[in-house]
Length: 113
Length: 113
Image 1: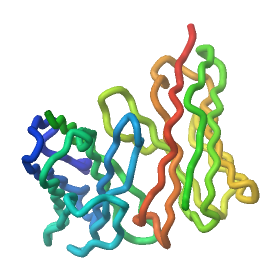
Image 2: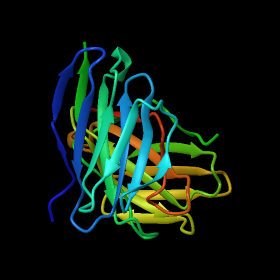
Image 3: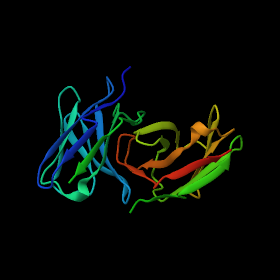
């Protein structure tokens, strides 16, 4: 079974721009979660989607948003980029059931200049 | 709020056992994870344990859970140079494994020859 895939792997943007990151979960997984990893803050939960609905949300500003499609693929969008948004963005998928567990993709490394 | 703590660094001699410790605060956590992250890579799920278990063994890995003290440990037997990485302890905070996961800051394991 193919693992979680994320595109693009690397991205350079400038302040004020917006960015869209994509995540394809493991086949059959219906839950997708997004995390931000920075040296200063570590791994922080952004949000989780299940069956196209946001089910959980972390403590990030409204500039960070996401969505999930009917095929469980998910996108996250960051608008009005700030320097502090430079990070590794990780996506994880799970079956979404009580017995499932989360498997992570390789991440998208975003650099904001 | 919920918190997961672990020491930042651990250095062991090749062939010895490594023990990485973690404490958490959310007593309702049902899934407790250990992830491994190598440089430039995403998170690799090593193992996980349910809160109704005390111990789980998987080849060179042994996870011990002391639910009363909210203490989790990962023991790696016969540590090899390929085990050099950052190890993250993580726990879920919601009703299922697909809920929000809180990560520790990670323990950087280095191996001495």
